[in-house]
Image 1 (spheres, rainbow, N blue to C red):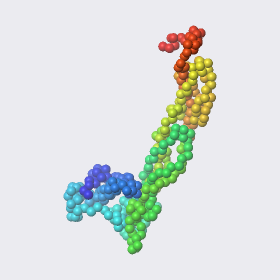
Image 2: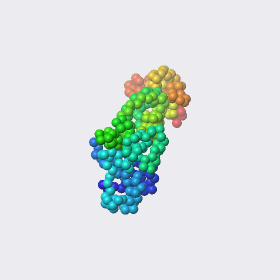
Image 3: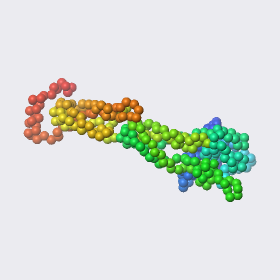
Image 4: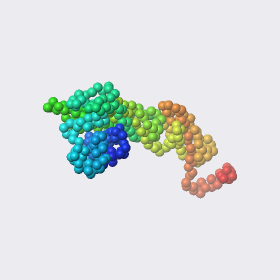
Length: 344
């Protein structure tokens, strides 16, 4: 193929080697064959970004591409031949040793024969004059849908999340021993050192979790580079709306319908709360829209002040009146008239 490596990786021509490496890492995880099994589009995309990295990570190839231009580079190449894309079928090509060990594995690097794994505890490794350091793995965001009640009261959850994991077959090295005494690319991770897998996680959501809040699960992100620690997993809380409750900070607001007669004569009604039902006294002469507070019945967060519940009464009027009812209402209006000025 004759691609634009800068466009393929989404970087500018002035991008630093670290920026190029970071861009490749992000895209490689996204289009990894294990994550997109059977997806030919993703497979081709993975080949493109690997080819783009092969060009931009090599100073000579990058200079040749920049100086010759795309078509001339692919016809002629930096050594007078047509450019050859990297081949992983016989193991990890030399120009990919560091990127595969640093980005996809959890070790420092290989020796000249690709056979000896270096110490995981080292903070930097060298190979053929190149040096790189360990790096913490990428953080991962995961949207967590919660019911209003679970977010308010807190809950225990178990999740099964698709996440990059260190390849168990090659232990993150990207290669395994071959029958001839050498090494070959790992068939499980295709030389990348990581595979997509399902991880089961159990955690507790604290009471009072808010919509959009991020909850951090340390060390449950992507594997680190070059023996670095894994990243973190961030649960992004998405709270589903409730048909009754409205939340403002830690206070709850709810509407409660009452009959005209209860509003006029007073009484007692049940109100739904997060912890069940509570009785609320309705004073005689309660007006439509009147608001009453139930102290301490709002959100009780794991940290912070407990909120209150505010109940707004909505007075429901009788719909059908027969002649006798009309007569009674007329008499009532004379006995208990309403001051028209209060309606202005």
